Image (cartoon, rainbow, N blue to C red; front, top):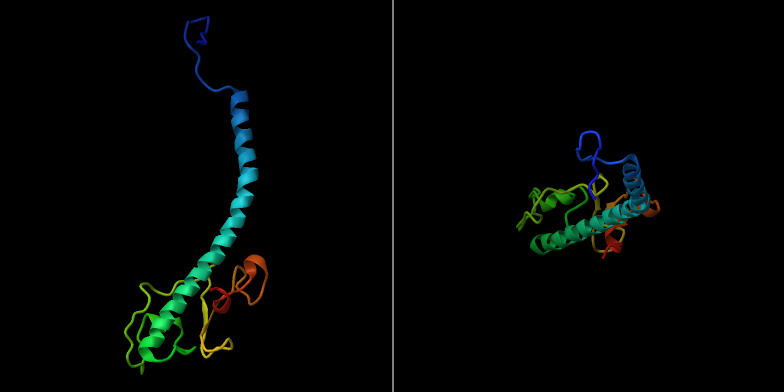
Length: 147
């Protein structure tokens, strides 16, 4: 059914105020229900990304040890996977295709060897707060629990 203006015989086009209010209300309800759920998933995705990166470092460290006979020291750090350290024989790297990334929260990963966790190195992401310890999004992601 066409909507005609009686004065000049033209068809009216446009959106009424009520139609606009209905659309705005639907968008507001959608945002109120979906956005909080998506924010929680972003935090979980960061933890998963940190675990994945740590596992990738551990794999590269295993290849480094196979070639050189030892893990890099704390002083050498993860950079030994990209740049040949001085006085290291049999280095066949680089063992990672890219530079060492920051953790998903923008902080550097912490590397320690010799480790307090046994014969393997420690790699730690300090989580969302960048401080040791914490709960939830602020909890540390550590190499000895990320497998």
